[in-house]
Length: 165
Image 1 (cartoon, helix red, strand yellow):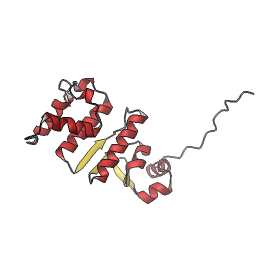
Image 2 (image 1 turned 120 degrees about the vertical axis):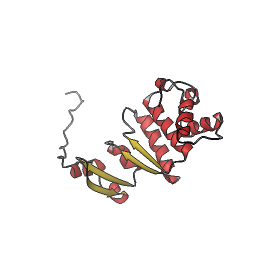
Image 3 (image 1 turned 135 degrees about the vertical axis):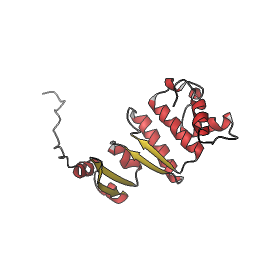
Image 4 (image 1 turned 180 degrees about the vertical axis):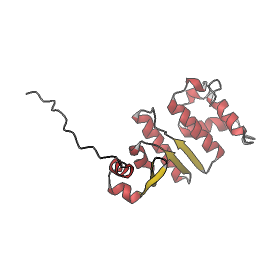
């Protein structure tokens, strides 16, 4: 996204780059941003003033405007707080139920475990394993990830008691 352009102007620009956007109005762009969860107060603000969460929502709005069949997302939860991460998860689950294919590269196993129907674990650029939804439910995703990547599963460390002696 171009930092000097507003959120709406970025959507207009990227939607028209490949010949799309003919006949779309300001209202259409606003509606896409609303559906993506971007607060209205940010629609006309320069993108450089938006936080990472809102910039990601803007990209998702663009994907919805273009009606792309697949979304490719790299590390979507990096820098997000828990509330923003949960909001993003819900939105991606909704898009998936609408028939969008979503490919996410992430090291956030909790995020992946909540939204994925299949997970491929990569190690050194190669596929180390693939998990189905049933396998995700049956075992702890964190343990599966560590197992597939060949990392030792750290032992549970007892936490010091906070009780007074």
